[in-house]
Amino acid sequence: MAPVTFFLDGDDDTIAAWRALQPDQQPQRLVLGEDYWIVLTFARLRDAGIDVRLSNRLPDAGVVVFYAGDKRVVWAQLRGASDTAYQRVLLAAVRSDRHPVGFADCEIVQNASSADGARALHVPHWPQPGLVPRDIARGDVLRTVLFPGTPQNLDAAFSGDATRRLLRERGIDLRSASGGVQPVWNDFHDVDALLALRPAAMGLVRNKPAWKLFNAWLAGVPAVLGPESGYRELRESPLDYLEAATPDEALRALQRLQDEPGLYAAMVANGLRRGSAFTTAATLARWRDLLAALDARLQSRPRAPARAARRWWEVVARLRRAWRGR
Image (tube, rainbow, N blue to C red):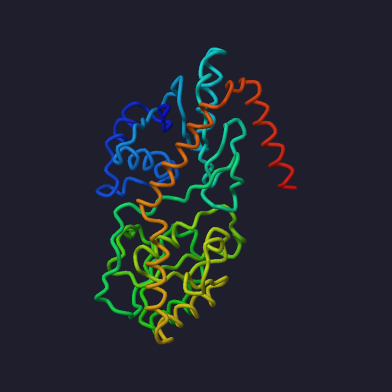
């Protein structure tokens, strides 16, 4: 197999520090999209014994995986090279929440609905490193609800007096990042449910992954989630999660988990079953298959695209984006 390089924009010291990452012992280091998609993937594959590199420079051969947010840096290195450089390189851009990268040979997308099996290839997000599951000794009582996101992504109604009063009456503590205190996102040992509902003004979010959903499954907690396509494409049963489009619906869902006999336990059992498809081992297997497929593309390609062709691909991608935004 051709060498595989994970490209990350950063100085040499930053790259050296990331190469030493131990994901399950240092989950707090992972914050940004490129941390998870580039650095974590490199670390997981490295630890599985696969020959991968992490670098801030493009190699002259092999498969290169880079984050869409770094596309300008990648393009600058391509543009600054000789006409014959990088002729044996296949560029795979991780799109994540970003716009398509037209000049790449292919893209890696986080939702199946964004994939076409040809240019856009789907691999789900890695599960949360160092995940600590819920303590089963807590039983089926719902007392602590975790909102695993930034304050601006939580509907303001949850900070209102009426909602706070209702939660207090129900004995529910809503845990979120507030007052400068940030929960430890990987630790669910004393969490009883997960809530992820964005403000209504954001509309239907189409490009976010189902990461919070399968983290909840793996942690053994039910989830109350907003109407997002990433969640919906994984939904096979009403037990997978409770959907809520508004704060009132979210509160009613939490009340159901408290009041309906057997619902809490059934959702936990279902989630543990569903989560088996999104473990670190399952995602590692998907990455192995993907890298093998990318290597096959590289080996069977008669020649690499010229920079002029890649530049045209990028123009076309931007025109398509502008057209669809009309």
